Image (cartoon, protein in one colour):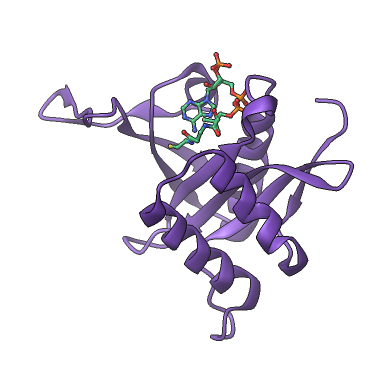
Length: 158
Ligand SMILES: CC(C)(COP(=O)(O)OP(=O)(O)OC[C@H]1O[C@@H](n2cnc3c(N)ncnc32)[C@H](O)[C@@H]1OP(=O)(O)O)[C@@H](O)C(=O)NCCC(=O)NCCS
């Protein structure tokens, strides 16, 4: 999409990135986790340890979307996608699609050789289907929570 750039979130953009979540009406509990993960990403105090890595979608230097990826604590061949949010006036124009592509590329670069699995917990939709994500089922049934979200996963070769 023209003019939209996906960049790593930097410390000077912390408040601006948080404002994107606030404008998107994320609840207080989610905001508490987002703040903690962002602070750990931007100024973590344990050398070499980062859990959630944040990317920002920008237009002319202003943030219009934020999203994260993280190595799972289950296994280092498993990764999670989280915290995708796009300002309401920028939705349905492919911004999260760009952030998804960028996050998969970053996971590939981080992971290196070998297969890996990526998890996401959200509504089934064509964007994830195109990227290879399929809903996870238990006992042959898709688990859907009360908001209609479910676990999806995709596998990639590093
Ligand atoms: C979900 C969200 C990030 C999508 O961003 P976007 O830039 O509009 O998405 P794109 O235009 O790249 O996506 C293409 C399609 O995939 C869907 N999609 C993209 N990301 C999605 C996600 N994380 N979960 C469910 N559907 C998604 C979009 O709904 C869109 O379909 P539509 O235009 O027919 O509605 C945005 O709507 C948003 O910020 N919503 C509020 C926060 C939220 O619900 N985040 C997801 C929490 S799990």
